[in-house]
Length: 375
Image (tube, rainbow, N blue to C red):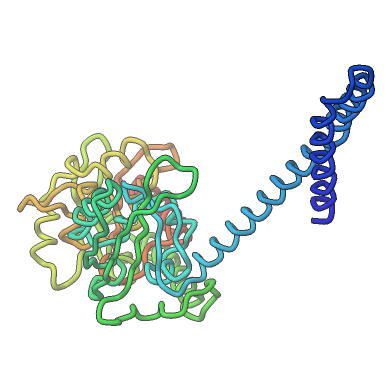
């Protein structure tokens, strides 16, 4: 600021001297060379001193403004993250760009996992189309919207979603700011205090249960009688059902898949029968696993027809209310695929984790070895 004031004083003095030079045009012709020398001296002063000084001050000003802008952006980001209301910033196709701490606590997901994925993937299937339509309308500039949706993790709790258009600075397209508030002030259990996840007794217990599951699978496979590959797959499905997955679908073969076993919740006898009669070739996930030999882990599956349709024409994943799935090929030591094992979790249970997927992949190789031995 002191240097800027000094520059202003120098410039004011220069303006006064220029005014005096203009007035000197009326002096006698013999004195004009002296006036001309003074004018040239003032021009040199501008070029050599005032102009570089001005450029330096301008550069410092731009740098200072950029620093202020960065500070403002950091402040706004901190406010966005810490505001106690669940807020998400999405594009016109509902792809998440930012998710604050309160929103991650409400949805039960990490911000890093949610970013780049459609926000509709965290909603119940019945609400996805309506949410996409309203978000697109807001992005087109048709005004703010609001609707009631249900999170797939807590389908029993209605959530009020308010959508408003937002144009981030320097970006050509309009984004959509989504505010999520539990309707009737109902907060999903266990998520009313946002904050970093910490190890808990329940997580430790879950890991211990996973080790028990691997042990139970090994025991079941080692005690198999010589009755063929299909009974081995059925017994493996029985070990996984209930204690690890709500639904277990076992298909044997590779070139021609055959549905060997379907185990589901006790109250879903009709759905189990319909799934048992389904042709595995009509399940894209199963076919892909059998051909490519790669494990598929999906949390809140985006494509409702990834596991085909049942006899009534309804998507299996929607009818079973699947919140996460594992589709694992049973690959033997030689690389031959002996079948495909698909596990579903539905309702409000926790999604399959990467650790659980790794354990299932290990068990799948053991199952394939047992099937190859008994085939």
